[in-house]
Image (cartoon, rainbow, N blue to C red; front, side, top):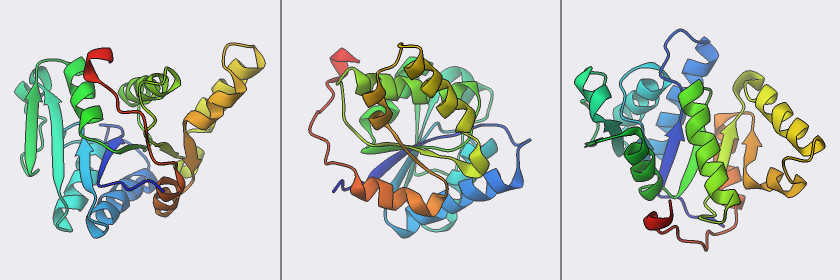
Length: 194
């Protein structure tokens, strides 16, 4: 059973999205606070990112955001978090988010969310870590991505056992059972290899 004290959440920065997605982000923030799990996120105050953080903060949860300088300078950083770490690049942001987290949850999002998700799954494929990665498939949002991966398996580009690099749940409330059921990570990623 995996003990998660710090969860990295990847999600979209757009506010022009389904209310169901917005509600899921807020619910995730509340649940993290309720369970005493620190939120690690991209540091933004906008979109689902902001909603997860706002809900965690309102419920008394611990929060840490990591944001690159160019986004911080555009004033999209969340000023209400416990700690806002400003880094020099997107690469540093992803590295710090990884280092501060025991596991990863992925809410709906756009290209940046896909980038973060594929990178952490690829690192797991390469055995650089074995932390849990869970896609939260709100309203079936991740079904096209899962179909793409299945297509890669059918075409021979992805090994069938790579389906086990991540798990999928349909609701925020199912995330915590998936995390608890995940094997305890044994591979400590050394940042010099990432």
